[in-house]
Image 1 (tube, rainbow, N blue to C red):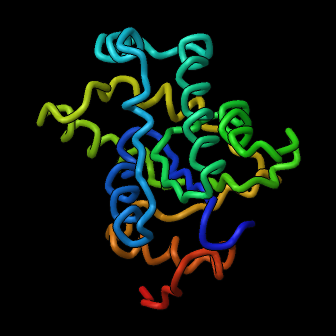
Image 2 (image 1 turned 180 degrees about the horizontal axis):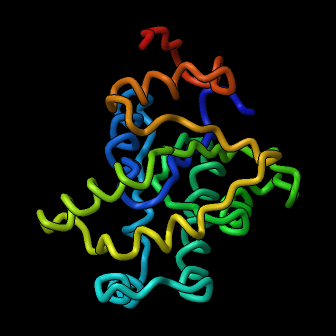
Length: 193
């Protein structure tokens, strides 16, 4: 893994996991740019989700390709990036990993790193319902189960997991202190939980 620059951290998980909150906090801590994958969706995809219609792989392909291009741009410019993205399927993560031009498909060795914000369905449902009631997101709670059904991670992928029921600062500290990232950032993070 490259040191200091040219690392991508994909904060992943289903709706309500805390991707945006944690991604923005990491942006401040690391001085990396944060991008929210939701901003890359076509308006037609957002409308489908507003209507409670799950997206298909075909719907997601232009979105994933634009995210891959964004990753490639940051890595080519040796800049760090935090991306908040559901990245539910291995195939989707492979497309994102390929933003690293030196990546060989299926090896999982990439400058693109995935961290799953993991929480029980009940916790996620409460969060998504609250956000929907406040009008803060276009995705209705009715689509949460479809995302949970799609979320598949193979152990060899090396996707890191963090308990998303922790306080946000504890989640960020956990990520910053992960062994995989030691020596990758401009300073060490030692604040314990």
